[in-house]
Image 1 (cartoon, rainbow over the protein chains, first blue to last red):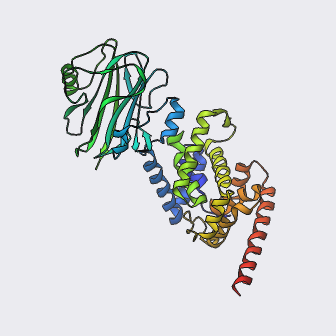
Image 2 (image 1 turned 90 degrees about the horizontal axis):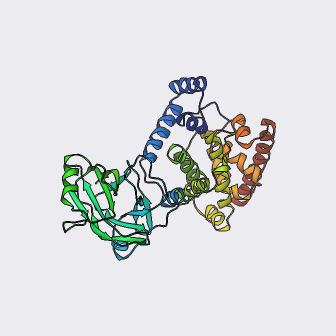
Image 3 (image 1 turned 180 degrees about the vertical axis):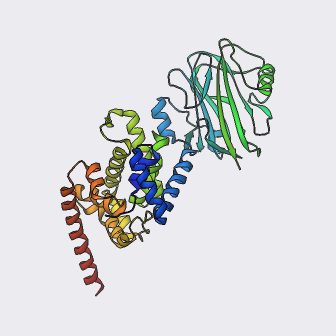
Length: 230
Length: 157
């Protein structure tokens, strides 16, 4: 149809499917052809922008086969919601670090009615609300700790008290509190903690302040680094 | 795979459906389907080729929905965004409006030729047929487009 480089060829190039010869031919053409050069750059940018988009929640659900939390009043009221689900079985998100054993954690977020799963590297925004949920076949205790772009360490859950929040066994249960994200932008690291016994909160906060949470016997800790933007 | 190829699936679905929201639905459907039935992709073709075919199929199925067909005919068509071959811009608009009316094989060939700007060789690869067959399919599409233009001129006069 045309002597120009088709989108299929650029898509193959972006995916690393083109042979070295075909790549050289395509790039040589683009050097001489303004339209193809523009197209190549546009598709490249489009790919980069797509990669930082949150993954659709249905896809994450399919990947991990969990049951997602049905939002309660706090979820509906929130501008955007992050949901953390504790559940045995499904593998962790790409790029997410996990320490210890116990229920698996799944992280998702999104506008009410359209929760989006989050993986390390995903983008969240100022004003988003955080809600934690879990599914566990045994009683436990949990916390959600944040270190924001200004290195401030905060316990989102429990927001008050000195020990981890009690988490009765159950399916698709919610952590006791939700949080609205503040205006500090940059990389925000979330630590999701689940322990079978009550633990004091202060040592965990101190540990995060000093660097990162290490292993705690019997507990499971998930770490998720997100990009918070205005 | 979603991170590596999702952008092209979404872009093509948007181009074919002229509706970003529906394109997102198609994107989701395709990858959720792949997670549920990974055997769909047997590795005999490149992943990009496979996803081009799957995306085209999913979009054409939507276009055949009566509601979508009515919407496309009624709405003002957006200009073709790829702009691979500006000479075919008018043809692309007609093709997009008429896709739902074409037989399946012609519709697929029309998408690849007039919307994706692919060569006959590339179309043959994605369709899994000969270049001659691609030529035949596109000749039929050309005839349909010509008939459509004649009919439009008659209506206008």
